[in-house]
Image 1 (cartoon, rainbow, N blue to C red):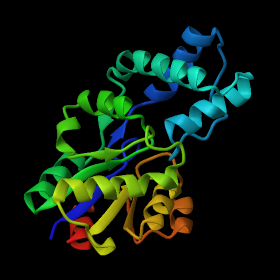
Image 2 (cartoon, rainbow, N blue to C red; image 1 turned 90 degrees about the horizontal axis):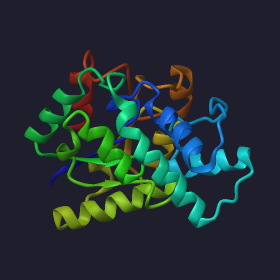
Image 3 (cartoon, one colour; image 1 turned 90 degrees about the vertical axis):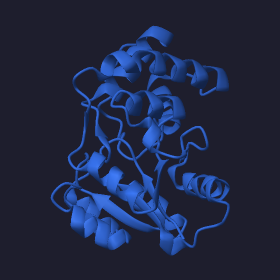
Image 4 (cartoon, helix red, strand yellow; image 1 turned 60 degrees about the vertical axis):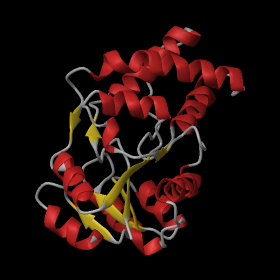
Length: 224
């Protein structure tokens, strides 16, 4: 029986150096002629749809399907140029993906990114093809509703349903931990993102590690 590893992207696989926020701000200016800081929005662990609604709440724009799609398209058009040299793969991640695949694990995504945004970010580093499938903000704006989509796609990919003890959610925020808990998965919090270590401890993940480089053996012992 396979093991399913569901990976978050921002702060877990990649550090984008603020590229996402910069692309959102530029998209807001291009699509709605509004230039405002977005630092007052808590992006970490949220979905792109949720974030766009928060932006509209501050700018007074209606959250119509048309406006949401317009903003998403404007953001995605700005994202590739904003990644540049600021985006990097976090330490130990590529080796962990290789080792997981070599030992029969299925690497997949469970991310608040829109699927197109996830592809842009991961393709920038040649990593998109390393993930078999994913659950994205396109599926739901609510982070805790993404897990069931990932499990459905895992079932189709493998041809059988995995028991919860063979599913691991890997992320860098308390929201990732909560999302994994909803589907009964075991959770790994990696202290490489914007969330404080104290907040990760308070979220009570099944495993908390500093990174996937120095604690690779601890990680693989846990998911084996």
